[in-house]
Length: 144
Image 1 (tube, rainbow, N blue to C red):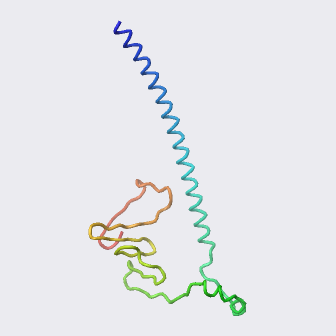
Image 2 (image 1 turned 120 degrees about the vertical axis):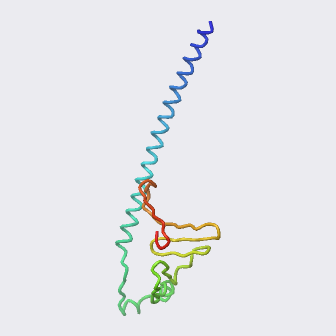
């Protein structure tokens, strides 16, 4: 009699386990599909941004005629181009137009950092979808 009761509940448990396993399998497949779609969207956005940066002209030539015909309010909107000051320290380039990051820190063309008394944070931009296992980081006193 105990054996029959045990078998009965064992069968129910096995059925419930199979149903849960199937539900988890479907949820995993949906999660993987969403992650893949998100990764593709991120890569497409990255490629579009990269193409726009490549297509955007760095230097625009304005003739005297175009300058005379330009309305006054457009002249006010254009940022003033100042000669860049060269800094002898390669890691600490200073841009006059860009405010420094919050806290005690700085930024370069490759990375931005902030520091407090207890911690230093370094932000290095990478392509979307880059996994930690694909990144090798060597921290040194002089360079990252």
